Image 1: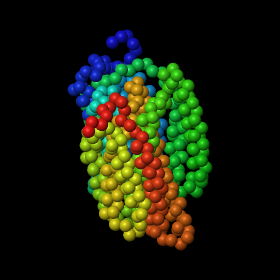
Image 2: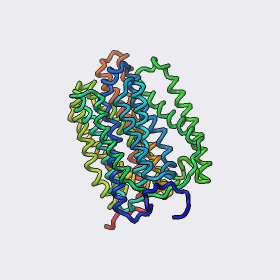
Image 3: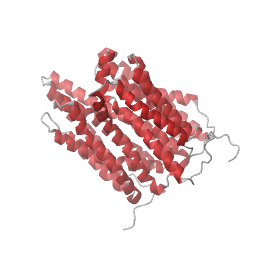
Image 4: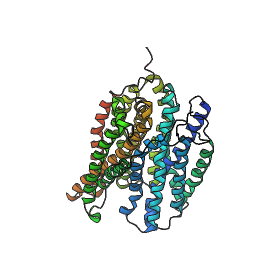
Length: 491
């Protein structure tokens, strides 16, 4: 190595790719750590009611535990693109896994609601670093011919962790207070920090890449404003929080800041100083993959929000029963992920994306016809179909999208994918909830029962999602396997 000012820690004796054992160890540590931090996103979802009661806050305040988490992710993830070029793998891992348990400890001991809210922000800051770090590391150390299989393991993390989170929380809450959810996660997170600090080594070259402060500020207001505005669309009580003005103001500020952010990046990337280098979109494969990823995430999170509402408010099912009904879909998605990864390595992207998009669309069309007398088994079947479709989508999208990006833009591509996931998830949730609320309110005003109005509103929301999903089916035909990955075998 030369005397170049690279930020490689003293324990990292090499940044070459000729140490498979080291690379495999780093990947598995990152996978397990990512599983822990993603688990946190859903493990407290069933505890919101208990938290509201203990801190004497209303639902509008309680929603901020989720909104603040999403806002933090939307603000921090875009910055990780340049941080991953500036700091070593080990340094970023330690930073993420220090923030996450610190936030978890603060949450477990919070005496007032405001402290718990701050704890969620600290947790989210660590979570925001892990996914781009994992993706960038995979693209750096895994050969193109094996990336599908490795991305399949990532899909296990992304799908199984959120699926079992509510189940774990339900078991804990059946016997203990909500704080024990955080006490359950804390020792696992601390253990990952200690093991990672000892075993993780740097796997990519780093340097003194300058950080543009103006880009950071514009990113905060841009992505933060848009995500906050989207979260306000689904607000249950607009009149108690200044009407629609906060939402409109957030969209205006966020939109203007995003335009300025894009213009700033286009200027800075000429000198390789962009916070998020938009030259990644020079690849048509990456661009189409991003669009398909956005639709898939919107469908996933929108469905995750509406199905429990339908099961509880329309069918009157017990929360534990609801959690058990939703669990198989997540587990099936995780079990399919390694198979999908191997199929990608053998057959490429399009042969998986097209059936995946068709299944996702079919599931949404199934849910578009739910009613007050729909069987829970019908919902279970629809959720499983959706989960299988998404399993066939996520791994090829991650692999083909990033595989089509030049190596020096891997960190930027990972950050863009992470940002799009958060914004699209917020958009999907907002769209589904807004359609449900508007339709339901109109029917109640016309004399319909609350149950029938809610069922009709949810069905219409899924109908809107189903129509949008048809665009995803078309887009799937335009995602090719990157030249660096194997083409379909002859014959």
